[in-house]
Amino acid sequence: METKRLRFRLWADTDAEALYKYASDPDVGPRAGWPPHQSIQESQKVIRDYFSNGHTWALELKKTGEAIGCMGYYAYGESNIPIGLNDAELGYWIAKPYWNKGLCTEALKAMVNYCFNTKGFQTLWCDFFVDNPASGKVMKKCGFKDTGEVNYCSHLYKGDERPVKIMRLLPKIAKK
Image 1: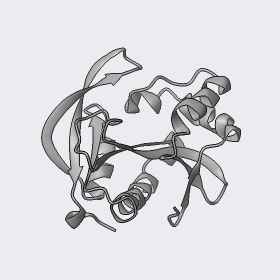
Image 2 (image 1 turned 135 degrees about the vertical axis):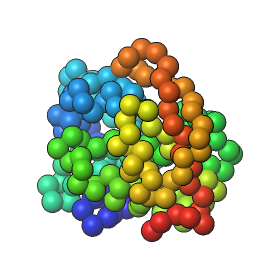
Image 3 (image 1 turned 135 degrees about the horizontal axis):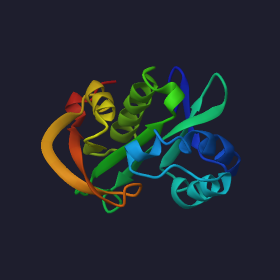
């Protein structure tokens, strides 16, 4: 998949240094529920153990060829929130130097299109920690609606369960 400024590609071991560069930032991981990376080796382990599942992609900035974020989907049974059998939960993060540039919105719109039109999911879900409203704004720009539901998800950085707002998108209101 590609957008105007981004290329979705599978993660490679060679991305460990770039991943560490951005995932070690204390402002990035905790907003998504995970602790800042402590070493390049930890980043390499994350690539191998979590990002090599076939449905989690590096967001590569076309201009530089560097991985600057991550986006993926989680089908029924893999999701952090209760979803239907033919649904998917989307998750993402982007490096702090690229915040507020529209890149996350650009990537999420492409992922929505892929999930509905290529994968055939019936409903897409996203959630965000209530102390990260910027992520909710990205979701709303892509057509996701607040369900009014709050779930509790593990916050690996803070070591407890934290409230997340649940957002939903149906195909008929998906924005291209």
